[in-house]
Length: 612
Image 1 (cartoon, one colour):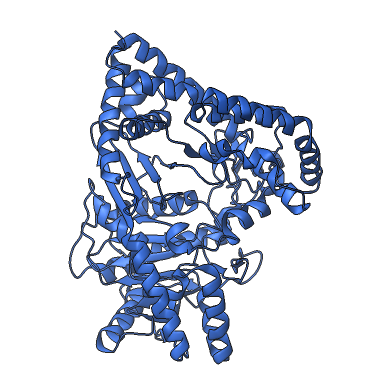
Image 2 (tube, one colour; image 1 turned 45 degrees about the horizontal axis):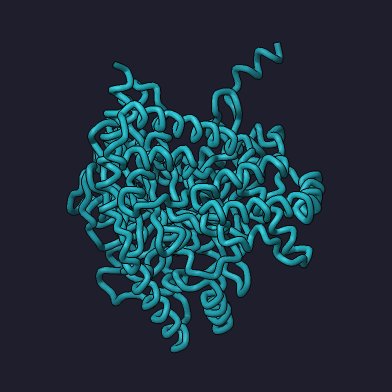
C-alpha cells in the first residue's frame, strides 16, 4: 500500500538531491588523448609533434602526481569542481561582470498576446510579475517538478539561486549571498526592489502571507512611476555594479563607511526576491528581429539595474520585456525554465488577469535613499563612463532564420543541435578562411551540483568537412560523407561531455592543484597550442543551445577577436543571437549570421540529396 501511495504523490523539486551521483574524475590518459585530438586542427605538423612530447612528459611525470591529488580531493567532495569553478570562472574575475559575464535577453511575449504597444507596460508588468511570483512560490513550496532526461533526475540546486540572491564584490574575490529558503527551511525574503530613473523603491510581494494580485502590484508600480516622473532623477548608485570588480568593492566599502543606513539599503537590494527595472526605452522588436531588445537588455541604462542581482526583470516602456542576470550563481537554463513557464501561462490566459480587481490596503513602496557625497558621485560618474565606452563597443544581432527548423532536420535523421553547430563553423570558416576554436556548453546536471563541461565542436572531422564544402572541385558524395563523419564525432563528444567525460574541466582541475600546491605551472598549460585551441578561456566561438523553447538570450564574446553565438531551435525556425566587439574590425555579427543562413541551406540540400 505504501508503495502505491508514494507513486501517486507529486515529485518534490529537491527530492533527488541526496541521491545524485558525485561528479566523476575521468582517466588521465583518456583526457590527454582527447586533448591532443582537439588541438590537432590548430597545429602544423611540427607544432603538433612538440605538443605530443609535452603531453607525454606531463602524463608520465607531474600530471600523474596532480591526477592522484585530484582523485584524493574527489573522495572527500561530492563535486570536486564546484567551488573551484565558482571561484575561477566567476568570483575571482576582476573585469566588469555586468557586460562581460552576465547573460541577458528578450522575453518572447511579443510573439503572441503582447506585441509592442504604448501605455501598456505597467499593467503587463504587474501580470508578468504575478506569474514570476507564482514560480518563486512553486520553488519555495517544492512543487516545481524536478527536471529529468528520460528517467534520470537532474540536479535542481541552481533553482535555489534564481531569487533572493546577489553577488557581493570583494577586493580580491566576490562572494554570493543567497537568502532563499524553501517553506520547510524557514522564512524567505518576499520584498521586490523597483528601479526607475536612478532611484530605488521596495515593496512586499506578500500581503497576509499571500502573493499580492496584479491590480495590487500595478498600484505599487504606478506609485513608483508617478514619483519618478514628477521629481528629479536619483543618484543612480546602481551604476556602480557595472564597474571593474575591485573598484566597485572599494566604492561599496566607502559607501558603507559614510552612513550605516547605506549598508541596510544594500542588504535590502541583495536579499530582495528580484529587481524590476522600469526602463524608459522602446526597443522595437518583432518575432523575426529581436536585436534592439537583446542589445538593450545587455547594455541598457546602468542606473536602473543591479548588475550583481541574480535576476533583473526589465520592463520596457513599449510593453516588451527583458532580463539581465548574474551568471555566477546559476546557468541560463534556470531562467529559461522560468521564462518558458511565464510564456505558457500568459499564452493560456491571453495575457489578461481574470481575478478580482479589488486592491487591499497595504503600505506604499518605500524609497531606498542612499546617503552620498562628492566621492560617491564621482565613483558613479566613472562607472557610467567606463560602462558607456564598453557597451558602445558591443555589437549584437538577434534574428530568426525562418527557412526551416527542427522538423526538417529531424526528418533527415540528423541532430538539430549538431546541425546548427556545424553550420556555425562552416560560416566562420568561409569568412576567416581557417577553423575557429569553438566552445559549446555541455550540461552535467545528472551529477550532484553539476553545471557544465566544455564540448569542443571544432573537430578534425568538422574541419575536413569545411574544407570539402569550400572546395569547388569537391564531389557532392565526398562532402556528404565528410558531413556525416563530422556529425557522428560531434554527437559522440557531446554524449561523453554530458557523462562527465570531457577533458577541459579535468585539465583545469589539474592546473588548479598545481597552483594551490605552489608548484610551477606545468608546460602543458604554457604551450602556445593550449591557448590557440581555446584553452584557458580563449575560445573564438563561444556558443550554447539555449533550448527548444521560445526563450533566448546572449552573452558577450569570450575574447576580443571572437563571437558569442546563442540559439534556440523551433519546429519551423532557428533564432540566433550573435555578439562581437566592434573595435575588432575582422569580426562582424551580421556577416556571420548571413554566412550561417547560407550554410544551413547548403547543409539541408546536402542532407536531402543523400536520401535519393
